[in-house]
Length: 124
Image (cartoon, rainbow, N blue to C red):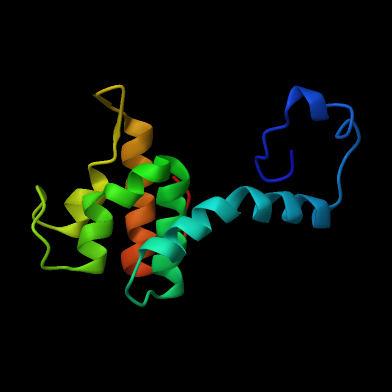
């Protein structure tokens, strides 16, 4: 529904007719709010809009794992010691599902990284 909003079975009747663009945007903002808040609460350095956007996309996908990630550590302190030699490697390491590297997650991480570093907003 709208911009990818998952409708609970209990809401099927409520959304049985098309919604307006305004309603779709309201749902979208509501769906993104928890991820926006995670970025705002845990990133302690200034971000450009493109960096913020890319981080929200990443957090949308990895959830609360972000709070303890090498990505967050390296953003807040580029000299932090992690198991990754760069922010890019830490970011792109989030490419597995159930221990398997997934092409779709590689594509997503590359797209997010292009937003973060170059401001290129292109789908995966």
